[in-house]
Amino acid sequence: MVREVLAQQQLSAELTLARWHPLEEEWEDASVPMPDTAEQRAAEHRHLMDAETQESLAAGQAGWEVRVELRSHRQAVEFAERLQAEGRPVIRRWKYLLLGANNEDDASALAEAIRQESPAKASVHTEAVPFVQFAASNREPEHCLLEVP
Image (cartoon, rainbow, N blue to C red):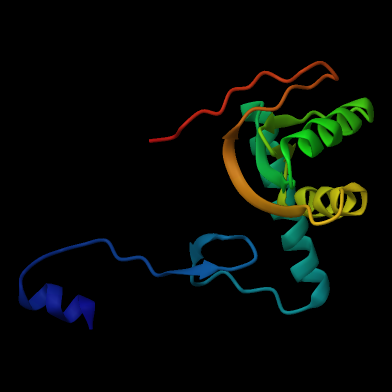
């Protein structure tokens, strides 16, 4: 139909048909088959996690964040110190803690571990935030949150 309309208007164009691939989270040519089996879906999920990890490592920044909201500033200080003593880089903002992860699966696993360790009534969430830089050592992390326009 598009070709007919273009021909009627004496126009030319290059046409492509793409569709959103929910596992790969990107647009793909419509001729590429979608995964049919659990193994194929698992392989594509691993591919996505590997790609997220490579992006994080190449940027030197965590692509995912685990955000912990605590009831008080004192709780945040104490919990941050405990996590840092375990070797986890933490950014502390008043009563919030931020921990980085390289991909969504790592962030989910980290969030679950943090939920197990966190004080009562702490709120733990994950989200993709490719602009938070986390320190790689036990020392106090550099507090730099870069805004992306």
